[in-house]
Image 1: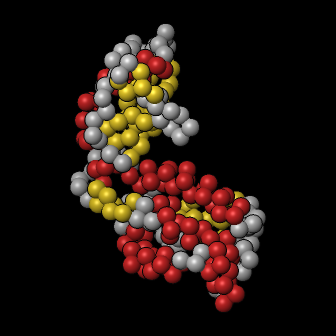
Image 2: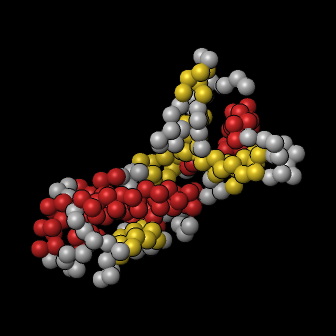
Image 3: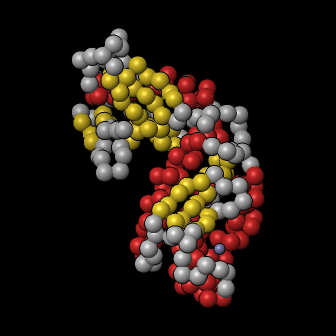
Length: 233
Ligand SMILES: [Zn+2]
């Protein structure tokens, strides 16, 4: 197997915790995912004894690689590398017309997502990113929480319950990281003050001194994000 040099908008990358290593001059990437543009496309390997060979298929935002009887993940990966031109064509085909979409506080061409299911994809990303962030900020602020849910809310960015559950709108992934942190901290401070009293805002100010900047960002762009496509996921 000869490794291919990654092209500008398609390169295979390791997950966090894994290393890309160089061998024999070529770049060899150990990978359960690859990056297309600025987006990560997870690779899901599955075995099928009846398969006549390696098969690649896109489903939602993932690349499914079928490994036939006697095959290996290593060979499947080599197959993925050889299939790079095909993969690029598939991703381009699946892309929607050129519209921009908010992602992490920046307008990004929708084609970059490489999937027609952008909302679903964003929601999946939000689950993997927002939940750990809530846990982190809850620990940092000594906040006891019971449950975190990512929801498809139409009117709010976050909420919390008297049972100490935190609910977040998946669209937060479309806002900048400082807004994400602010909304999470806002909800965590509601666990101390279930209102918007001066005391509440003092708590917010304490843990998130830049909250005004985030509020301003939401005032400017929040409505657009909530009301725009991608809508329901
Ligand atoms: Zn509030």
